[in-house]
Length: 427
Image (tube, rainbow, N blue to C red; front, side, top):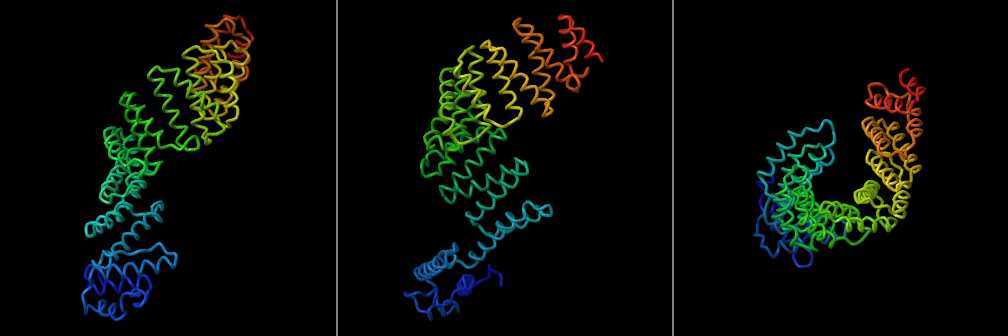
């Protein structure tokens, strides 16, 4: 039987049977089983007060069974809605179970979905379904379609006025807006969410405010960006929050942009002092080291204690990403600034080794050129160091005649009368 053509009595019976209950079960103590029978056979009208009692009795039985399934007065009073919700749940579950299958027919699914919601206006189900579709397209890197379905989910969250739903979709939609460079959307959404304050889940509020801060950052409005980050800080419980480190790093970037190096340096020093109390996130920890090293280099600060702290922290990280290699290079530059030449040699060798190991050819060439420039600018630097690293990579294609480094090496060897190395480079 089509759920759209059910009578009120048939609808009640359908709901009762769905929950596997008897007429006496849904009657409870306040309604007779005979009245339930008369309603189901459409021999007496169903009043709202009776529908409320029936709904309460059904939900009480579900609670006793430890089931999350529930019904409402609307489900009982309006034929078809309950079955429509069941069908909507099937659509949601189907996407969840089959969305990653290579045989999943997306066009057929969307056609069925659009046809269904054209007949049934169910904001809570639409929210769930559209949010899942937004995530689905985001995972496929189809950002425009992801933004579309996140926007539809947001519209239905507004209709529901559900704080959790609003916060969750706002954080997702502001992230997607940033990726699409739709900065106005980020700021508008954030302004809608902020008045809800503590009634929004902490993580959703923090992420929305961080996205707002990034939006203002991209607009070069560093003042407003810092304001948004300070608001986000209000919702963070402390260093154990997984957003804490990211927030401090972003603040540091902004203060550096505003040429407020003292504040930036203090934030990063505090992070380094308290690193054992922070959630482990290698990328952000490397970022904090990198920013602090840049502070030292930009301001030509020779702080031995700070240098040793950063070095010990980087030594604890088992990583060889390009970002880590670049940070190690900055550490070497600070060592050179402090006239710790042997330390500079050691770090530079480590950097070049990691470049070779991971086939970072462009980085290898860049760092080698940097060594040449340093050698020409600083007469304290030993030619023997250049000779040693040259011999280490002599048989590698990194030093081939096509590499861009070859000619410079030959020139330096000629200037230093190292004909043995010249011969090796040419043969």
